[in-house]
Structure formats: structure tokens, C-alpha cells
Length: 141
Image 1 (cartoon, rainbow, N blue to C red):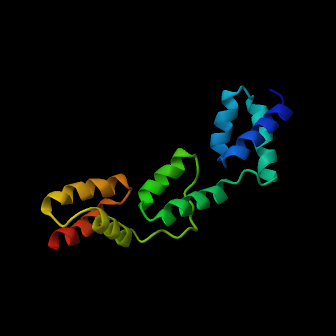
Image 2: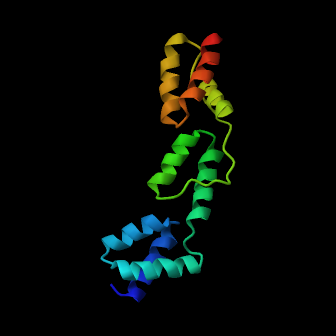
Image 3: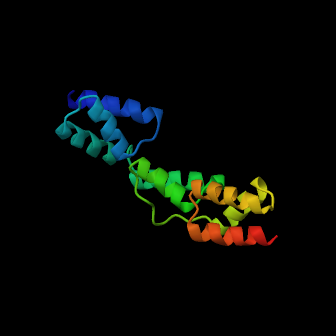
């Protein structure tokens, strides 16, 4: 595939969904684009602001944080899956408040529910210290 074809294919892929540089490279490699052509296409797309991993990482982080259901570790894992860096300048959600609200909404204050709540919070990407502190309050009630 030559430069023009690769560039057009990249634009088609980016038209469907915002992609990270790593995601775009992987998709184009699967379609047989050489590394030299790939490097030129990525450079052109970055110059035209079609590819911007920092901006995309901030947007993805804010999207998951705004949902109010995920901890920092979950969001970071989502970013890594998309080959995106963890943004330094984004405001992290208050995990203690988030986890507390999720537990209050989803679980009753019974001792047998504490283990389920811990597993639920762990799958949602909350750190062990947050889970421990939230569940201390959970079992006190």
C-alpha cells in the first residue's frame, strides 16, 4: 500500500472513531502498510491534528471520571489498552466519595454484603486503601 492509499485508509478509520497513534498503527499494519509509509502517514496526521494522544487521553479520562462509577486504576487500565499515556494535568475523581456512593446505592448494610461490595469496587478500579476505608464505614453501620 502506498502513501496515498494508507493516508486515505487512516482518515477512514479516524472518521469512525478517534484512535490513538498505537491503535492506528496496529490497524494499518494489519492492512499491510510498510513501516516507512506508516511513519510518514502518522507524522502527517499529527501535523494536521488528526492524531493527538495527549488530547485523546484527557478526553477518555474525563469521560470515565464523569460517569462516576470507576476508580483511577480502572481508567488508567482503559488508557493503556488504547495505547494512551496517563494525562498528568487531569483532575482525579474523589475515589472515597465515589466508592462510598456506589456501595450505598448497590448494597445493603449487612456483613455478608461486605465481600461482594469489596469485589465490586475492586473490579471498578478502586485502590485497596479506598476499598478498606469505605468498607470500614460500611460495616460500622
